[in-house]
Length: 477
Image 1 (tube, rainbow, N blue to C red):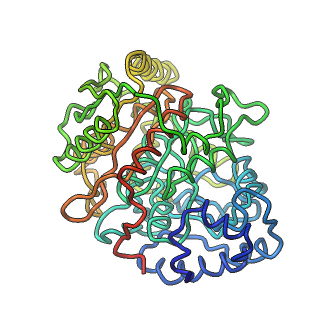
Image 2 (cartoon, one colour; image 1 turned 45 degrees about the vertical axis):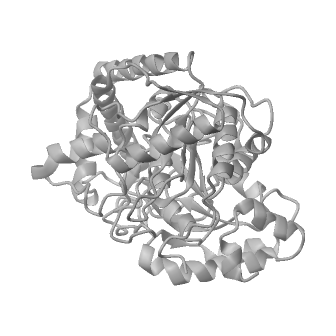
């Protein structure tokens, strides 16, 4: 097996080769570094290489950990890796902050044997569903470099899709794991709220909208990495009940006969692109063929109110993020250090009074209850992940003159994803469809709060029925 063939194995298979001593951690790391050096100039997925540190880690790596010797990347948002820079995609932080210690999640990644090679590109403060920060430049989709990777975990998804690494850290506050997974043809699981820790510096983000996990090529990788990281840290504000079985075991088990609600109309009420509708319809038919009961049905909730209130909470999050980093870094908040869309959102957050913010939280929670009620009847809600295929770079560009268009496009694009952030329920995007332009179109499954197990079982069944592991993007050689 060549090192390039090794690159497109999933992380579970790579770790097994290390355990069998067919390849060493050092060889794994050198192979990944070689691919990054070859492919990253075209994709701009990795903004902070940490190669020497990775080489040092590989030399002392134990082969007993579940992902021993497997190369890995961190998204440059929230994930603190002691002694390394963190910028959150912004000129405000770039070159001005070095993490003093590992965050709890990074500590767990390292304990699992994953070797961190660098940090990945992200929009400024993870604000947008595309990865085109002014500070670091656009990240390009390996399936078509004129198109977006999605966001905000676009650098991580581009790197995994192109075979630089088999898995990478990501986080999701309105779809930021699932959106780029759809655009780049990966598995993107957003876990239940609180499943992975955000500490020790942070308890939660935006009243629980944001969570961390990974993007991967296989369902079993996503499940097994969640086994390695899940569980509360001391002082966490909330956490779901622990799973009955390891998630990796669930990935190999067939689900019971499920009742699946199927919908193709985004919660915004703006119709989805035909390619996205076709993708979801094809998977609904596949689920029927696999013996599940599929009914056209969607949660009943006030989508306009949800998106308006979500926007207010998101503005509060952005305002908090900038103020928190100003306090931690000692930097003064000045307009020219931020992108125009970021600054506009920051000012909106500044104008929010506490009562209005909590009213928005209340409205988000009301929508969450409406969504949760749907799952008293259905086990799964099946939808397209996005309302459009991967859009061209520049689609979400902001100017004062295009402000209304910018806001409309943001809402329309994520019309299926952000309800899971509002409710805290788990959701997964699966690469089960490609359109006539050979662009991946993700299909999303949402499950009950705390029930990743059912999602993972169904996802594993769909992966077996319609495998995607042999597909390769244009930029991968």
